[in-house]
Length: 258
Image (cartoon, rainbow, N blue to C red; front, side):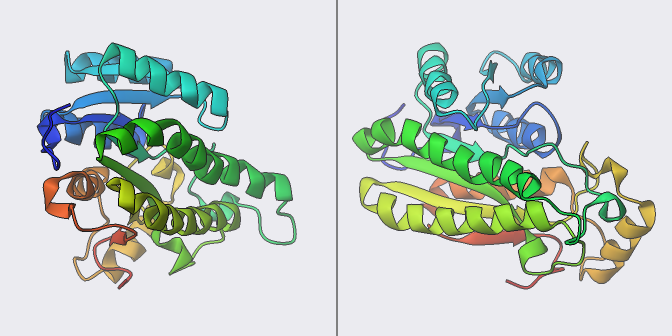
């Protein structure tokens, strides 16, 4: 990494969790487009991650790890550091197995705690594991960017994704408390929250009528794309956001005013 206290994206090494497909892949593509060195983390989507890394070029490499397990995250950060450089920026996008179809989600009368805990483990425990693993080197360098991926659903809970929404709300709380603690070390922590995206693997099960309804409800009259959310993630990693921390940027075409 450069000695620049606020390095541009093309001088950063970016680790993106859950980047083998969907929004994570779009985020990897955005950073690669801007010249960053990119580590694509995946849990089970090996083929997709390897293909994406090959397509994005020599500065991108795929790494397997389950973010729910601290020892695997420690290994992940060590392997990334050895192979392509110390992560200067981490984007925590990993998602527990989930399908965005409100008709298929459990209502409160059938929702189990295990379903909630599965999302908490990936979203919140995963973030904690990543922060613990990356913090020492970031603090030593006096620079770090941690970006979490949230949702607009805890402001506009129009579908019964109780487990997913609760976990993302808890992740926002951790984002803000981490920002307060890590700021003196030169580390910013922010969240980007999308809405329904057209289209990812997870949202492919969403009925077309729901896409149309949400699109017509936004000031922009369309559903946001993964690429548009990815571009907002770039902002928090860039020098333009050097004085921004603890914030939640909602990227959903104006459906929710934050």
